[in-house]
Length: 389
Image (cartoon, rainbow, N blue to C red; front, top):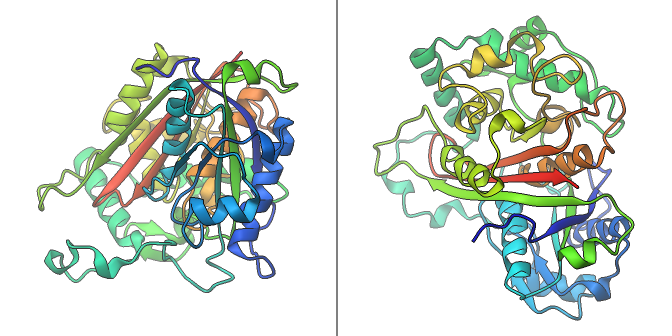
């Protein structure tokens, strides 16, 4: 079943905090929920579907429904796939709305790893219970090592250079300067990236995303409700999801699950990558963006490094503006799971509500994509395509 036109995005909200020393995780979820509902012009009593991931405390959806005050729920979903979970939640919400299971779906994400001193750990994920760990080499669990392997393989296969990786961070920094909430607002150069300390060869510190507290929320509604609200109409026209894993050691590091999720989303939408005027791409590391651009069809496989060079991702300058809020590299990466913020900026662009300095002209079709897990191992991808109506 195609999801084209079956659901609309009615409300969004991004928490302004990047460190939440005085808020609980539950409080953050409640605050982003209320913010998104206010943006939509709806109330808690209108919500009959609720979606959350493992970052929700307690028993997840059950606990948060009571805490937030969701008293009329008919449908819940607690799908967990790391940073891509929230794109899957929007897709699943649209499916539930199309099936008549609910009419107003609320999706929340919030976490506070900085305040809790949790480091790079993901909320709700116990690595000790993963059955594959005893069979893996003794590689430290920090994700930068896996992404460094992907980057090194990409360089070997396709001639990608550190300078090309650096252009991704440069573009993000040009956008972050206009975001008052961004963690890093200084514009950087390619040389700045290459001079930053090496973290895991070939990735430098500025090739890596930030870690933050905070969160965000999205309200997905039935088309009839969307047309009653006094908000710009943003229609979901395509969605795809896919999983890729090491295959018992037979893994090809040159591509990601985006190859499958993107193809499904474009098939649903009935458009091609050339029709997209803006992309929100998961940017846990600079190499993540390059691989996604290739797998989603914006450039041929192996050409991602050349595609991003010379500012091609910078709004007002390049052919394909990306992450105009500064992305995970410069702005916000709450709970080490950046999928929610990708949805939020994509909707802002589609509405024409991004910062004037980075608002794109071609906003009829925009794409948001998230990756959860590790590109060097098991990961899940979610792709959403929106249309301004």
